[in-house]
Structure formats: structure tokens, C-alpha cells
Image (cartoon, rainbow, N blue to C red; front, side):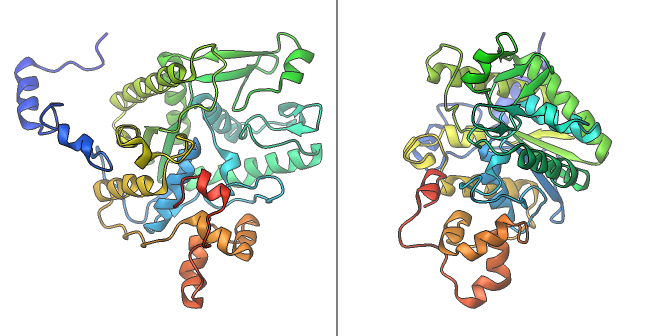
Length: 378
């Protein structure tokens, strides 16, 4: 079945009009940093629009650069003790699959009554497998407290959002077959061995991801009928594959599956658009677009991507300040980071605008921290 059918004469006219429609005539773009892409938005966004970003770690990059341009980002503020999660404060909320994103929306509509049943007891403590895989074990009481906070404070902010921006990460998901629950993180080997048959891996296809995206949209529109959805594929590669394939091959399959699902999703709904941040990053020179691990994208290319995004969707947005990087600022000022992690401030940038600039606070340390370097800061 064709995703779209175009009249033959119209197809030739489209090619003639599109200056970037032929690879050879646009080849010079591949020598530039970063690679630039022509894109026509399906809708415009107001400068006062409230954003909620959900998805892989690339969503965290996007949030920061939206904030730099004056956007109201509802998903940025979070309570995140540093002893639990030392990286980007809200990074423990990274959602890598369409199915794990959908699960949060299902719980928003029908809150889980027995929170303990949705948690996992491991050999070291308790884990919430709807959160980032790197988040360690904690006490049952703390795991319940954190899940209750997410259910009662964090994800309900979706009801106030005008725009939901989704970054799709992986097509490999784990499922708890006892609870029929898609997981965001793999269960530890200890648990898999302890309960044979309870957990399995699913290599999802386009149809499965499209079905999840369609249900996500239905649930989001029930929260706000006027909501717009922007979807993209995260350029951050998978860290590891359980498929038995070379990780490079598995990553290509994963991104291709999600890109095809995103395209079908956009074609089906006029209130959904695809923004080609994945293409901009992945077609740029690797040592420009990615950090030393060739996994995390650089802050400079995210700045370009989001500058392009705002110029297209919201031309009246503020310009980003020169030289400010969120993690660099937090590293330079632990007192500010403490206020961010307590939820008092949404970001270090909020502090810099309100107080730090007038106080003459430094934007960075002389030597970048390991976490800032890993996250692509420069």
C-alpha cells in the first residue's frame, strides 16, 4: 500500500520546483557544518506556546535550547536528588520507546492503584523500569514516593501543554508478561533468571510503533483538543542491542523503523508534523555532530537544530544567548544546581536570567566536567 499517491505531472513539477530535490545539485551541503535541510512546517507555533518534551536524551537537549529562546517548557522542572542521578537533572526521565511513552499516558488517565506492583525488587533494592536504565536501586519507600510525584505532579503538566515534542529512540522493548507492561529499561539478568518466562524482548515493527503513536495522539488530544504534536527521531544511537546483530546494523534498523512510523503518523494527522532533526545531525560530519563517544550530540549542533526549528515554526521567538550552556553553568555553581534539583528553579538558565547575569556569575568552569563533556557541552 502506498503511503501517498501523487499525480504524475504534479510529481515532475514538484521536482522542478524543489532546489534540494536532487542529491547531485545539493551535494555541496554535505561539505558544510552542519548539514542544512529544507523543511516546510505544516503549522506555526505561538511564542507563548507551552511545550512538553518527551523521549530519549535528545529531548533533554531540545528542552534546554527551547528555554534559551524564551519558550515555556513544562517538562524541564523536576525534583531530582543528585545522590540518585548525577547527570542532567531530568535525564532519569528519558523515555526511549513509543510504548513506554504511551504507558505514562495510560497511567495519567488511569493511575495505578498499587504502585509497588509496578516496581521491581532486585538483588540490591527497588527499581522503576519506566525510568532510565542507569537509574540505580533505592528503597521501596523512595521508589513509591518518586513514582507518585511523577504521577501527581510531573506528567499531569501534559494537560497544560500546547505543543508536545517527541523524540523517538529505540525499537527494542522489554515486556513484563505477567503485568503485560512495556518497560523503558531492561530488567536485570538476576530478575530474568529468577523468574523464567516473565520477561521477553520485542523487536517492534513499523505497525506496532504507529499504533502506539496513534494512541498517544488520541490520549493527548483528550487532554487538549488544540494540542499540536511535533515528532522526530533521536540521532543518539542505541547503546547496546539485545538482538544479536552488530549494534550498527541494529541501530540502523531501529532508526529506520521509527522514521517510517513517524512518517505514517504525520501523513494520517494534520495536527502532527515531523521535524528533520535526525537528518540534520546524522548527515552532518560526525566529529562536528557528536562528542568523543560518537553517541551524544554536541551542544553546538543542537543549537543549530533548534534555531532552525524556531525560525520555521515560531519566527518571533527570542534569539539564544551566546556562550550559555546549562550543564556548564550548573557545574560552575553548585548552589544553583541544588535549587534546580529541589524543583525551586526550572533551570540554571532561569537563574542566570533572573540573578546570575547581574551578579556577574561565570558561565562555566575552566575545565569542563565529565558529565558536561559526555552530554556534548563545549
